[in-house]
Length: 250
Ligand code: PGA
Image (cartoon, protein in one colour):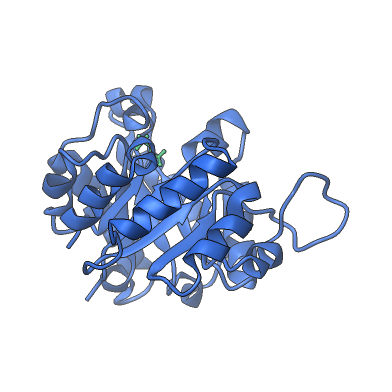
């Protein structure tokens, strides 16, 4: 059985005081007391604060990005070992904002996934098509290419702790959510790719949905058989909304 995951991607938002307040509110609203795993992904500078407040609680935390190298002369990068040092258990790789704005290719995403594995971090691998690609009928082709690039660089066993996040680019931060049926179609497709990769893998690996998940639409999305929770941006910055989304996951 797959345990649902609700993950909050805070992106480049917040300051020290606001992060402390949000953490207090998340703890007070007992977001992780349900059946779902709950994680937050703060900006790097707040990892010490997050680890201090969340250590010993049921809320996990991770980083939004990771270097593809393990250490050395890579100015501005942060390694998986450093993330482990601050108690991270997971990391996002291949978020569409990294792919589009910072030109991360499929090959770079695959390298970052390998780096996360070397550091013992559970990665959330983000895939998803642009509006142009969807309108052109290329959604499944694009998602297949993104998933298979990560497969090609990594061995079967490497996926035991992975989570995939289907995040259609046109739904991120736009208030336009994929319908539960649209999400289900792609999630089932990704599960099929996992099964083709290794017998039984599809049944074990979580596939979460991201893109304008709110307290209002989470329950419908999470009710789909292949949607194992959500990766939440905007709504994860408000404790009451995030708590409602966590509750919708079980
Ligand atoms: P959103 O972001 O919920 O604000 O659309 C989701 C994401 O980018 O992970």
